[in-house]
Image 1 (cartoon, helix red, strand yellow):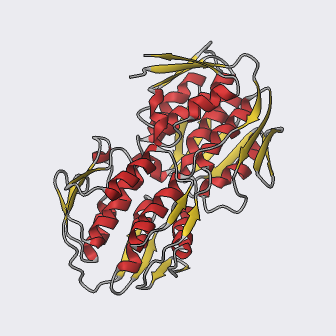
Image 2 (cartoon, one colour):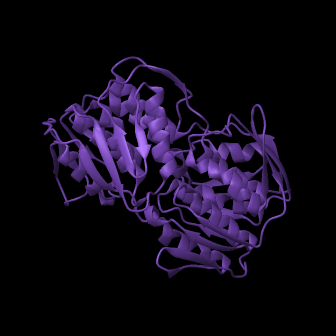
Length: 409
């Protein structure tokens, strides 16, 4: 097992074209929908991320016990899929996954007539899923300020319910673009749905087999934006990214116009180039919480004062991402504090370290958010293998732009 990787870059000049991994958010939704269609759908450019490879295997498995490992979308999407299709399974995951709440989703599925029993602590995996009994109920109220994956799981199985589904979202809607992504993919596979105000209506109807090509991952692009912002000189091309994208993390293009990177959309994808950055920046990450770690690390390194809101869902990710960031920005003499409820401020300090070491907390995004800092000084990332969750070739791609990597076993 690789303990760490130390990165340096001799010139600080980045030029190259990088083929990003496919979006696991799109891929995992498309896999569930294709399975629900009951027909052979052609999915092109499926993600090589571990989460997507895992979901592919599990959808084909006839095992009585299914291990979702550390994959949040896999756990949540399979919970809805198994519950409504009546597949009797025990669904479990890693120790951390069994600490991540699933009560909101399970309560909703039970209201629809699903049979789900907790095998450990109430509200958390593992769970035993039984035959779907159905009770004629098709109207639900669901909290929408925790994780959009609960909502997406319900929406994808909505057309399979005898009376369809009417979903009322209560509270601030978090990660709305990911809900829109789910509905757009459902429409691509023949299902009509209406999203008006805070009500989503999905009539009972069949999915239809279709072909779909998965877009490259905008979340993965964020690390290249950070690299360009920190480089002395840079021109990076990311083929395949679409200006009109289903992915909420495409917001990175607009964010980085303030933080030192200009995006030029081309016929083949995007080209990233350095530009001047603002000295102060504030942003609501409700629609794109997975970008927060990258932005915090970058602003700490560049001395940009930062105010963040919309971080509610970060507490229940692969790790408590807010707490992890609060610890790791201490390397810069910075602090990340909640100044009023839901409002966080990055207080700047001086970088006194001659080298950096960052812990990853079994979280792929912690590793990739802090790796670009190797453009400033030697940087060691612990447990580098965590990137396999979403971007298995991340370290190899850094070598393509002349980073020097030393792995410690």
